[in-house]
Length: 227
Image 1 (cartoon, rainbow, N blue to C red):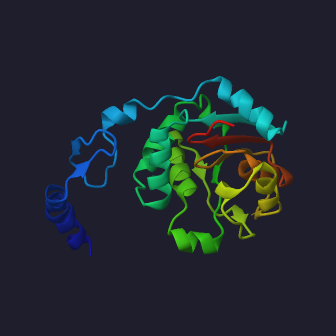
Image 2: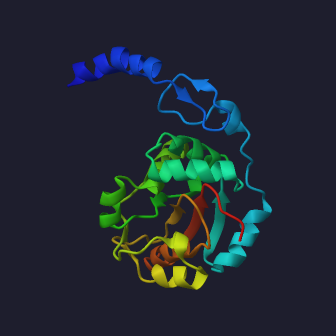
């Protein structure tokens, strides 16, 4: 098996990259790796989230026990498209880019004990094939040398997609949806998701870990659309 992987890496994958070239979805520039979807120039043009956004999110989520909220990028049509292909079309390599954007905002990673991703219900995980928040969380944990666990926070209730719901329905949809399997006594937790819309999902996750005696909870996401 190892020998086959070496053959693939050295011979077959480069050939695939030649036969099926990759082009940036925004400027159509050719790229060497057929797993890429955006060129470095277009990616560098994505705007960082404004500092005032954290304050607006705090007001929206309205939970005094949540300490910091880290948002990587300002919402835009480009970013919306990237998030869609990342979440639904298996362009999972974007996770490392998104994690890097969030990592630059966290000045004191040594004060964070655990990174937890927002979990998917097992049924939805099977349907999609992967959890996009897990991919970002794992990359972020590697970048910041923080312990990562994807088995502590569980989604015990199958919920419909939040995208079609208004704010009150979103809150009701995730009410009592999460379960924490271990005590988090005196730990500082960073919970990560791909997008914050109303904040109801992350707020429900934060309340769950706070009930399990977490000391401090931070939230993080790649972006958040306008309220």
